Image (cartoon, rainbow, N blue to C red; front, side, top):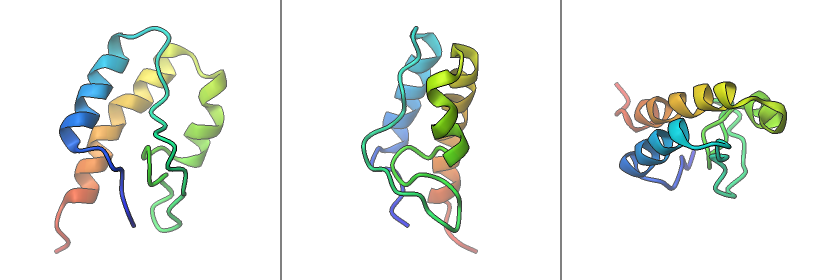
Amino acid sequence: MTVCTRSLAELEHAAEAALRDSPVPSPCINICRMDAATGYCEGCLRTIDEIASWSGADDATRRAIWAQLPERLRWFQEPAP
């Protein structure tokens, strides 16, 4: 799986900004491929449910999703045991 072309630092910076911005921007970076093994988009690291509900989600829900993205990228970057 090719995971998120953003570096962890870039993603953390974008997530911090999203926690302050209104309206909350989408984390989509136009690399829209779902990984069957993880259930995450390879571009933005959201689930299909998170992507589908984004347009109707309130800012609190969007911020909660953004807050999870850096941790998801950290998980993918951990070396396999």
